[in-house]
Length: 354
Image 1 (cartoon, helix red, strand yellow):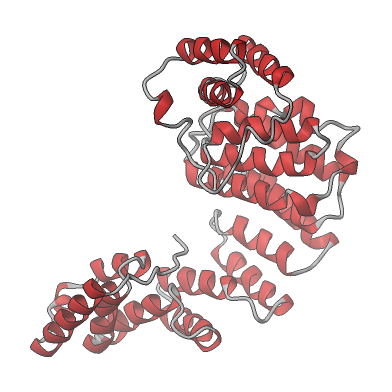
Image 2 (cartoon, rainbow, N blue to C red):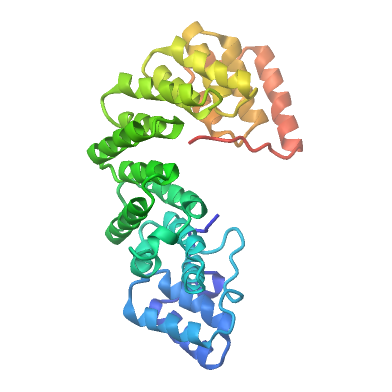
């Protein structure tokens, strides 16, 4: 995972100019590891500034093994990842560079990270030689981040990111993953008519689980509720083992008041994956509401103690009506025991789709 912070504690509070000056002095002293930190810190604020580009070039020319100077363990700053990506590209590893660049951009959509690599990383001559399997997940992280951003992405990030994806898609028109994430990027940018047209074309050419899901995800953003449900159901005909579509159907149908149908999909997930961290609290919550079932409500409340990191359980427990939240004496005692046990043991991290 790429970290949202642009630098370590050594660079906190420094301006771009101060970072650049420290980096230049460190390069002159051939303290290249130290220089790399400050070059990255400056680039992490404005990667398109020409003088910072020149500073990077100076550092790169002085480094015998620049990749060794830019380690990227999990949690590495996005700005270090940005520099590492360019070095990878210059070493002929453009697939890896592209994946890393999109992951860095996903961490900080407000900074024009993708624009840094738009021309040198992917062009019409290079795109056909790239392997989409090596960078598909990076584009997926970028698309997902766009969907959560609420339109806050930097304009250059939007323009460059979409341009790269379109260029890659044109070079690999038959690649299912690229087609899916192309639709997802458009959806994340709220360009719903374009996303819907593209997803329907995708399904017409290649009817499969992923293309059906692409159409369903776009329709979910429109007023065609029945159409969205139908496409999620169609996706299940292509992959009857899929849990995600069942969870989406459960959420959609329950939120629309079609609780019996929605619970049935949660139950299908639980049959395939007992104790599922999203399906179980969802089924308990909607059963409690539908049947005024104090037992289901009690189980949901207990989940918040037994799996304290399960955000879905916590959110739904907060939504329980007052009469279902008022635990009987037996529930209060068992809740107290569960809380005591939870404090003694390491919390079990609950997965969440939120």
